[in-house]
Amino acid sequence: MKIAFFSDCYLDLTGGIVTTITAQKKELEKRGHTVYVFSSSYPKSPEERQKLAKENIFPVKSCCFIGRGITPIARRPKIIERQLEKEHPELKDFDVFYVHYEAGCSIAGLRLGKKYQIKTIQVMHGREDIGEQNLIPAGLRTITALLLNWFHSWYLPHHIKIPKNEELAPTIAASKMWSLMVNHAANADLVLTPSEHFKIKLVKMGLKRPAKVLPNGVEDSLFISNLTPKALLPGETMKIIWHSRVSKEKRILPFLQALELVNGKYRLDVYGDGNDLSRAQKYVKARHLNVKFHGPKPFSKIYPEIIKSHLDVLVSYHFDTFGMTLIEAESAGTPVLYVDPDLKEIAPSAGSILTSGPSRESIAASLEELMKNPDQIEKMSKAMLKNRDVVRVSRVVDKLEKYIKM
Image: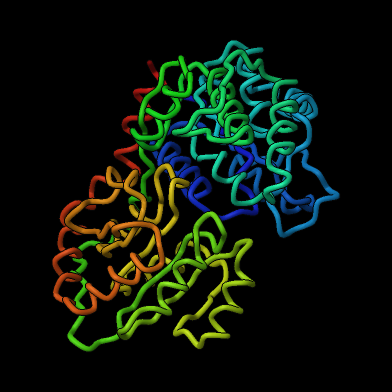
């Protein structure tokens, strides 16, 4: 088959969407499929573009005046459509357009799919309502959400109206972000979500298109055979790893605040970048916490550190619809601590700890309980190793191939 990925989160970024696309692309190509990836991007030299083209990865026209340090932003969808129709006329012969995210490049993928009468599959990755709440100052959230909807509706019809509701959209801003998500998904032939709980939420908010669950997966090549379970000896320093974004929505500061309350020996290694990195570094320095920041690293460099750690953590709350951290830890046999009950369907209960709540006190209490009962680490690690084959990307792509042929 010929499959084209469209995503506004891929080139020049790290994170779950990037990891998912990379793993699925490699597995699909290994099976003989032709796979293109189109993505927004920082400016690239001709040499860089040529190197990417050898891997069938193509930057779309993006806003050059926006500097590095934030997500690359694609130009208007119609500009991208003209670019792709000129540079890639072969797209008319593809079997499926596989769309990730909801901005300019992704919108162009849905529109071109409709124009060429090619099947479109939209993956809904994240809670954009919570993302906007965390990233935009309170006084600007409503106008930002209104403007994003206005822009989006220029290119894709918004037939579904979503009023405020107490459960998922308690504010105008939240209702408008749900409107963007649901109406974007409504323009695809098939909608995929990484978790059942997110699919249920989208349907509850008005999505009528066929929807299936497709979990994320970890590259098979990363699986190391004969891994031994982690063990934490009494009195030993607990090695904790953080490899999510160092950002407000991932709640790095509440986790650091929890460490400040912990009465026990720990070391935290933080991998990644994000909008709260500077604040987190200042917090650690001011309070002399045993934390080391390593900055963004390729996942191939982070994975061995996950294997060496006693505990992996994901403390986002009502933001992650899946949480790649959870399955990356599972594949390495590393126990995880998380705070969001929605993620229970992702993390094996025998290999993980769900805190009693999202507060720093709840997180600290769970960490202290582990330190008082270090034998739990080995029990949880054994459970992770026993279950880890289910998160191989090859199993995910088995399902994806079926969905493409539906």
